[in-house]
Image (cartoon, rainbow, N blue to C red; front, side, top):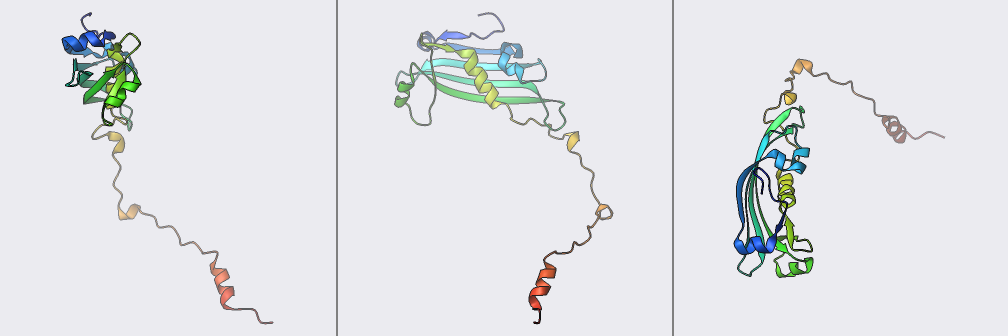
Length: 176
Protein backbone atom coordinates (compact mmCIF):
# COMPACT_ATOMS: atom_id res chain seq x y z
CA UNK A 1 0.00 0.00 0.00
CA UNK A 2 1.28 3.43 -0.91
CA UNK A 3 1.76 5.92 1.87
CA UNK A 4 -1.25 8.20 2.04
CA UNK A 5 -3.58 5.82 0.22
CA UNK A 6 -6.14 3.34 1.43
CA UNK A 7 -6.39 -0.12 -0.17
CA UNK A 8 -9.33 -0.42 -2.52
CA UNK A 9 -10.00 -4.14 -2.76
CA UNK A 10 -8.99 -6.40 0.10
CA UNK A 11 -9.37 -10.15 0.50
CA UNK A 12 -11.82 -10.13 3.41
CA UNK A 13 -11.10 -13.75 4.36
CA UNK A 14 -7.33 -13.16 4.68
CA UNK A 15 -7.79 -9.88 6.54
CA UNK A 16 -10.27 -11.48 8.96
CA UNK A 17 -7.99 -14.47 9.61
CA UNK A 18 -5.02 -12.16 10.31
CA UNK A 19 -7.15 -9.51 12.03
CA UNK A 20 -5.92 -6.93 9.55
CA UNK A 21 -5.89 -3.43 10.91
CA UNK A 22 -5.30 0.12 9.66
CA UNK A 23 -4.64 3.03 12.01
CA UNK A 24 -3.59 6.04 9.99
CA UNK A 25 -4.44 9.63 9.11
CA UNK A 26 -5.06 10.14 5.40
CA UNK A 27 -5.26 13.37 3.41
CA UNK A 28 -8.67 14.25 2.06
CA UNK A 29 -7.32 13.53 -1.44
CA UNK A 30 -7.36 9.79 -0.59
CA UNK A 31 -11.18 9.89 -0.52
CA UNK A 32 -12.34 11.16 -3.95
CA UNK A 33 -16.11 10.84 -3.34
CA UNK A 34 -15.89 12.73 -0.04
CA UNK A 35 -13.75 15.38 -1.74
CA UNK A 36 -16.53 16.01 -4.30
CA UNK A 37 -18.82 17.39 -1.58
CA UNK A 38 -16.37 19.76 0.11
CA UNK A 39 -15.29 23.30 -0.78
CA UNK A 40 -11.59 22.86 -0.06
CA UNK A 41 -9.07 20.07 -0.54
CA UNK A 42 -7.66 20.84 2.89
CA UNK A 43 -8.66 18.36 5.52
CA UNK A 44 -7.83 14.96 6.82
CA UNK A 45 -9.49 11.66 7.59
CA UNK A 46 -8.41 9.57 10.58
CA UNK A 47 -9.10 5.88 10.00
CA UNK A 48 -8.90 3.10 12.53
CA UNK A 49 -10.41 -0.06 11.09
CA UNK A 50 -10.08 -3.74 11.76
CA UNK A 51 -11.36 -6.80 9.92
CA UNK A 52 -11.79 -9.77 12.25
CA UNK A 53 -14.16 -12.59 13.14
CA UNK A 54 -16.83 -12.52 15.82
CA UNK A 55 -17.63 -15.33 18.28
CA UNK A 56 -19.67 -17.15 15.60
CA UNK A 57 -16.82 -16.96 13.09
CA UNK A 58 -18.49 -14.32 10.92
CA UNK A 59 -16.26 -11.72 9.27
CA UNK A 60 -16.73 -8.22 10.62
CA UNK A 61 -15.43 -4.73 9.81
CA UNK A 62 -15.18 -2.37 12.78
CA UNK A 63 -14.08 1.19 12.08
CA UNK A 64 -13.72 4.51 13.84
CA UNK A 65 -13.56 7.45 11.43
CA UNK A 66 -12.77 11.07 12.15
CA UNK A 67 -13.04 13.73 9.47
CA UNK A 68 -12.11 17.39 9.43
CA UNK A 69 -13.36 18.99 6.21
CA UNK A 70 -14.64 22.33 4.96
CA UNK A 71 -18.23 22.40 3.71
CA UNK A 72 -20.32 25.29 2.38
CA UNK A 73 -22.41 27.00 5.08
CA UNK A 74 -26.01 26.81 3.90
CA UNK A 75 -26.79 30.26 5.32
CA UNK A 76 -23.94 32.36 3.94
CA UNK A 77 -22.23 29.92 1.51
CA UNK A 78 -18.84 30.60 3.11
CA UNK A 79 -16.62 27.65 4.14
CA UNK A 80 -17.35 26.13 7.54
CA UNK A 81 -14.98 23.60 9.14
CA UNK A 82 -16.79 20.46 10.24
CA UNK A 83 -15.28 17.80 12.46
CA UNK A 84 -17.22 14.56 12.48
CA UNK A 85 -16.73 11.23 14.25
CA UNK A 86 -18.30 8.01 13.05
CA UNK A 87 -18.29 4.43 14.29
CA UNK A 88 -19.25 1.57 12.05
CA UNK A 89 -19.64 -2.14 12.61
CA UNK A 90 -20.50 -4.18 9.53
CA UNK A 91 -20.68 -7.91 8.97
CA UNK A 92 -19.03 -9.01 5.73
CA UNK A 93 -21.16 -11.62 3.97
CA UNK A 94 -20.67 -13.67 0.82
CA UNK A 95 -24.37 -13.42 -0.13
CA UNK A 96 -27.55 -11.71 1.06
CA UNK A 97 -28.95 -15.09 2.12
CA UNK A 98 -26.26 -15.19 4.84
CA UNK A 99 -27.97 -12.19 6.45
CA UNK A 100 -30.53 -14.58 7.95
CA UNK A 101 -27.87 -15.51 10.55
CA UNK A 102 -27.74 -11.91 11.79
CA UNK A 103 -30.01 -10.01 14.15
CA UNK A 104 -32.41 -7.51 12.60
CA UNK A 105 -30.34 -4.58 13.91
CA UNK A 106 -27.06 -5.79 12.38
CA UNK A 107 -25.66 -3.96 9.35
CA UNK A 108 -23.83 -5.86 6.65
CA UNK A 109 -22.06 -5.60 3.32
CA UNK A 110 -22.05 -8.26 0.64
CA UNK A 111 -18.59 -9.06 -0.73
CA UNK A 112 -17.95 -9.40 -4.46
CA UNK A 113 -17.81 -12.81 -6.20
CA UNK A 114 -14.15 -13.33 -5.24
CA UNK A 115 -14.79 -12.51 -1.56
CA UNK A 116 -13.22 -9.06 -1.76
CA UNK A 117 -14.30 -5.89 -0.02
CA UNK A 118 -13.89 -2.43 -1.51
CA UNK A 119 -12.61 -0.93 1.73
CA UNK A 120 -12.27 2.59 0.36
CA UNK A 121 -15.86 2.60 -0.90
CA UNK A 122 -17.24 1.21 2.37
CA UNK A 123 -15.42 3.80 4.47
CA UNK A 124 -16.33 6.63 2.09
CA UNK A 125 -20.01 5.67 2.33
CA UNK A 126 -19.85 5.91 6.12
CA UNK A 127 -18.03 9.24 6.00
CA UNK A 128 -20.52 10.75 3.58
CA UNK A 129 -23.40 9.62 5.80
CA UNK A 130 -21.76 11.14 8.88
CA UNK A 131 -21.32 14.61 7.37
CA UNK A 132 -24.00 17.15 8.27
CA UNK A 133 -26.85 17.42 5.80
CA UNK A 134 -27.08 21.19 6.29
CA UNK A 135 -23.75 22.58 7.50
CA UNK A 136 -23.96 26.02 9.12
CA UNK A 137 -21.73 28.31 11.17
CA UNK A 138 -22.69 28.46 14.85
CA UNK A 139 -23.10 32.23 14.65
CA UNK A 140 -23.59 33.04 11.00
CA UNK A 141 -23.60 36.70 9.94
CA UNK A 142 -26.36 35.94 7.43
CA UNK A 143 -28.67 35.26 10.39
CA UNK A 144 -28.20 38.55 12.17
CA UNK A 145 -31.60 40.19 11.91
CA UNK A 146 -32.21 43.75 13.02
CA UNK A 147 -34.37 43.99 16.10
CA UNK A 148 -37.74 45.60 15.43
CA UNK A 149 -39.26 48.17 17.74
CA UNK A 150 -42.92 49.06 18.25
CA UNK A 151 -42.40 52.12 16.02
CA UNK A 152 -41.40 49.83 13.14
CA UNK A 153 -44.61 47.79 13.34
CA UNK A 154 -47.23 48.97 10.89
CA UNK A 155 -50.79 47.91 11.53
CA UNK A 156 -52.83 46.91 8.53
CA UNK A 157 -56.25 48.53 8.21
CA UNK A 158 -59.17 46.30 9.13
CA UNK A 159 -60.65 44.70 6.06
CA UNK A 160 -64.38 44.57 5.51
CA UNK A 161 -65.92 41.14 5.79
CA UNK A 162 -67.75 40.40 2.49
CA UNK A 163 -70.21 38.10 4.25
CA UNK A 164 -71.36 40.82 6.65
CA UNK A 165 -73.80 42.08 4.00
CA UNK A 166 -75.32 38.61 3.69
CA UNK A 167 -75.73 38.36 7.45
CA UNK A 168 -77.62 41.62 7.38
CA UNK A 169 -79.99 40.33 4.70
CA UNK A 170 -80.63 37.12 6.58
CA UNK A 171 -81.75 39.01 9.66
CA UNK A 172 -84.19 41.24 7.68
CA UNK A 173 -86.35 39.19 5.35
CA UNK A 174 -87.96 41.16 2.54
CA UNK A 175 -91.55 42.08 2.96
CA UNK A 176 -93.86 40.89 0.23
